Image 1: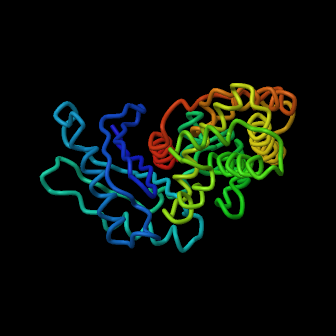
Image 2: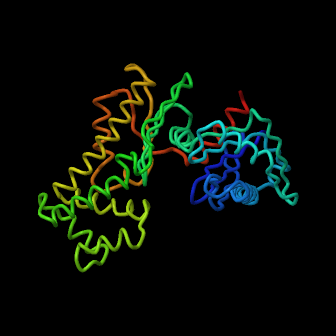
Length: 321
């Protein structure tokens, strides 16, 4: 029996799964962030090692005996340049599991798969590394791969340069619309009152203090996107226009990925990931309707598995090939 590790490493936490060759997950562990570009190599290594050890400790090792882990897949945010991959390879090859665990690791270079978090979201979302994933959470990005191994990425340029259709984008447009109405520069929207009530403000002008003086970042602002979504579901014309704009942007990006990777006769799946899709304003339904007009053979699905599972699948593919 062959065993592999699948790791989803991000800026807030690291998730590791231990998987066998039959795709059975034996253990799962979590640790702190592992983005070496913001944390440094040593801190990232410690998070990776701790997540692996916790995954192994959570498994029923006695049932299978001593484990030899032969491959590892890592999906990491911000990893794209050859230098990044070399650095992560160095970290992985220097991982040392505690000798109290009944586990050995023998990672040949070809069995260390290092890729972006989008690639493991796709592999986990569809259950194999073919198709498209449309991520619309705090940020947004579209990533796809076809059966020939060709990939296409659209968007993902961050909240200043892009991230259209993301929670942050929706929230910012909502805040701007509320303030324009407050000024008398734009039509009525219930968003002004909704933001004021949600944040406990006496006057909408206090948004300046909340956003600027409290140093709100991307995540805090993106967390306001559900207010826009709810207003749209309740019939607010301005909020509905913002949601429609977000869906249009995500559809446009997806269309570009489809054109680059698939032809009109191919069937493929589009896994949608992120909090934007779960709102009350039916973003998913709007997106599905738009995609069906572009690619009738495409099927929009919810993710089958988590990204860490996708990383494990990529590790198994490397081992088998």
